Image 1: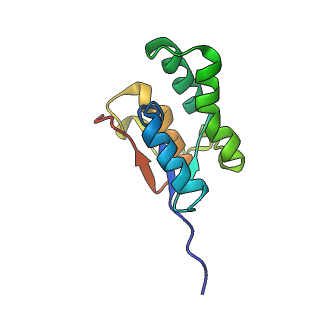
Image 2: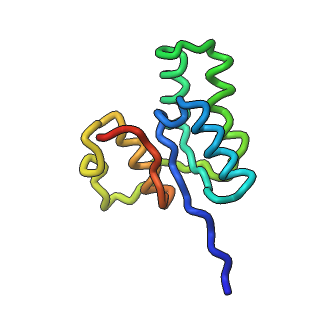
Length: 119
């Protein structure tokens, strides 16, 4: 019998902004292996930019905050350019700024997309 893999999940940047959720989901993925968190450079760049502009956090703190995914899940980086060409990303979201999140979910074969965004 084959072992079932944990669901592959994308954390939208609004989830990354919540330190409590971010740490909880990170622990569930890293320690309990209940999730596999996938990420892209585009996601981390957006999160870093918003943390420094809107929180506002010092650049070094924001970089450390978003760098957790890169460090804890180094093999789960997804190139959003590999999203299937037959999927119209515009049909998956009403917010064009979130198309890279949809591309990450599609290219990374995500089972879950965790977000507070209603678009």
